[in-house]
Image (spheres, rainbow, N blue to C red):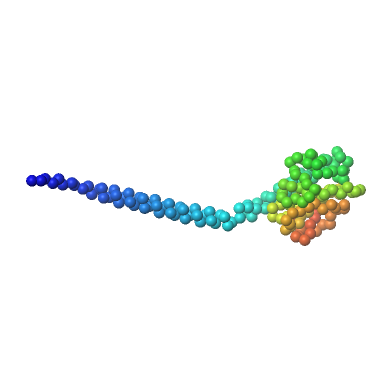
Amino acid sequence: MQHRMRVRRDPRADDLGFSMLATVLSLLGVAILTALLLGSTLKSGSSSSTNIDNAPGVAAADGLQAQQALSSGLTAADSAAASQGGYGSLDVATLGASNPSVTFVSGPSTNASTVSVAIVTDGSGAITLADRSSDGTCWLVWRSPASPAWYGAQTGLASCTAPALASAPTPGPVSSSAVGWQQASFPAA
């Protein structure tokens, strides 16, 4: 007589197999959803602008940076003119030596950290400084020994170059077609 041993199955073993299968399927589902989410996030990021110039407040902050660079540039020009014999004797190198934190150029300004310089070397010895902010506003300052400082702005420009003005600017409104000038402070752009 053969004895057969009966193997008794534990009902919990079936539950363990089912639990493991459920866990693996859940993890697989999470992995698929994560891959889809990352794919759509990366895809949408590549089509949007990575430039922060259009973020709220950036244009205003950049405009203030441009105005501050012009104010610092004017202070450097005033100091250098006092020791060099007037605005007409200045050049970009002298201004840069007077204030190394400001980048002075004789050509156009394409950003808020570069100041364009134009100097009238005839009898008036006037200086004009210009600086472009990221929103396309060209900010300007003009001064001569016989006149207080004039502040100007023109909107919608890809770059801005300081104009050589022998006489004081004419006051007017800021627009995309002309520089709006005023005394005492920068105009609203």
